[in-house]
Length: 639
Image (cartoon, rainbow, N blue to C red; front, side):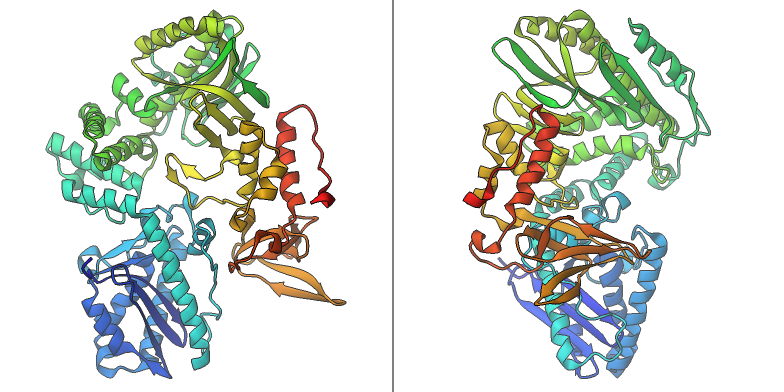
């Protein structure tokens, strides 16, 4: 491949030293430059930046690049080439950015206008939407999630003013470690990058560093403005603010129930007026022994913990409404009031375009239209979006819950001995006799005709349920669906969720083997050889810190730890202690000792001295929540 001169990069801006490290994604060349009183690579760095055609980084759009931009555009740096002046200027710029980001909280400060950027930037931090509070993630956390060999933090305080030439080597090693971790994350991000490139070429939208939700929102904006021949800048200003919303105004008129319980709920909603959508309502109905919970986040309900299996006489069927939120809006003509009925046609067009792209095998465009369709609901409740109309939000979420309740009521009233296992946002899972299967599908078909929505079915051979958010479901085709604590690999939708904590992966893996294949958890755990799967993560907030305490002879050794710590439970190790800034302390994994594993050390699994007792015990805690008999630990001395 030709050298495109695109570099993964990272900088360090200290009070008395500046470093730049970059890795060429084509040639795999590494360069490192230092500006310091004892080493001034400024001229060489500027030459490198002049030939650089693109940068890839992590939070580089709003931090690294603005600092680099200052270096490139400050004439005195090039003319005087004074290391003291350059380092002072870049450090002050970095501190200014940090203060702006602290005030902004979500790293949305625009540090350099897009039109003024001299080196195109790809920011993986923005692309994965880690500038969102709910997904906020550091590169160090990602290193742990990716099983990166070295979780390394800065060895020197950024405020140090007396950094020596010898200490620069440690800074450069840290700088390079971050660059190579970013490169690994870049490789995992390639499908998302290709999607953005395709949409840029097709629709001419500058979406390279946009999150999925922003891509969806902006794609709808473009298609809506094209359809209505309106100016995008004017449409972006539009909103439908609501001082209050009478829920009776959003409930579909054909929704009625047969039972007193559900009709009482319906009456309650019709009498309710809300003035915001967050936690606006919380209601519950118990009908024929099953509790249905309602809230602005959707409907939820779950049978008691247990293992539920299909057999020769019974089946388990899960019915999900296909694209519930988009289809609810389209079939019922819901739209943000300020956008008018044209919005419904645009929305339907997006669904049609997605199906055409999917049928043609163009999964990139199919995924793009999927982002657009799925973004509408969330953005309709975002006051910063042109889609904002909380009445539209409530029209979707409330009617979705009531329509699923209508299906549940019909099924339990008509089919004797049918058991509802779960109701969750957009679907319902039931267990029934095989002899009632035809009746079940007919009732579902009648519901589809009435609601103009489509159900998608999966047959399960087994469900292991702790609660509505934590379960394992095994389809009759052998596909396994894990949720919550039983997730082996963290996902959001269909893509990896690197921002989620994947601590002690061996536990859900052993539980899956136990419940699905009847393999004792001891067998899975004792025969597993990937040390990373035994590792946990601890992340400490600003002001808090941790220490490990261990004995060296008769002396207690106390070692302060970095902010992101990877470790595993070991037979011989240290006590892990969290110190809160308010002065209190807490034992981490109380009753066990740990081995810090920030740096990977390769050796046979037996030599890690893993305390298997901890992992088996944690598995039994989950098992005993679900099954009636209480399991106890086996005798480890035999191993």
